[in-house]
Amino acid sequence: MSGRVGERTAALLEPPPTLVSDASRHRVRDGLAVALSAVAGAASGPPVEVSLPLLRRARSRPGSLGLPEARFAWRPSFVRRSLGLAVVQACAEGRYAAPTAAVGPVADAALGEWRRTGWRTYHWEPWLAGLGSGARAAVLAEAVGWASTLWTTFEWSALDGRVRFGGPDDRWCCSGAPSVRLKGRSELRVALGGQGADPAATGTSGVSALVTVAGGVPLDGWHEELTFLALVTGLRAPDLPVPARVFGLWPDAGIRRMVDVDEELLNAASGRVVAAAASVVAARRLARPG
Image (cartoon, rainbow, N blue to C red):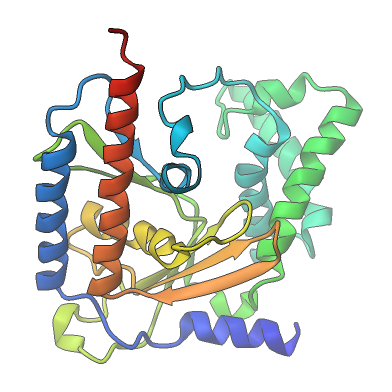
């Protein structure tokens, strides 16, 4: 591994400069609940699910928020994250030397399990099984590209025993505005062994960093977008410390950035959530007949 990879890994694992206290978390949560109640408490229609893609759409393409969702159909880009993450995990466990060697066997194992039990671990198994050799190669190539970016970012020997791969999405529903839900998704959760400047705030048990892989390029507000993931995780699991750090990768642009989470950034992320929810509610009203 190069020196730069080692530096990135050390920066990810470095003790955070501060930890978000429970009092800070409560202030952020209460302020967010009040603001969401004001803009979306009486919203009609299906719940507004605020996710990282929605935050970006609300800022870059607000006119698209009122459009109906396109009918879902599988395509290679929808497979690359789940297959790519399984590939990285297989490499981190020492079963394969690199994503290019792992992707075929990992995909075959998923298909074999589905054929044997009928259980769709990743949901795409029947679709992938029905593809011809050329289309299958395109799917695997997408997954290899995604996995290679994540695999070459860190020194995995230093992360041994610290990493949780994938897992269910983090979800939080605002009690004052049940029509609004927050959803966060991270690729990795990395345990941090150090201690922040204020250990009395929450202690160090369970302190973690999140790693996320995004499409496109980081735009203005990327600090808030990364912090959004920590916000949702911190609201969903109030008995655990708010993630202290979020590391973001943008493979399309070859860019990697990181934020240390504090109350100011959590409030900024909350502001983006409220603005996005308000934009969706407004777009729905404009699109409503009559």
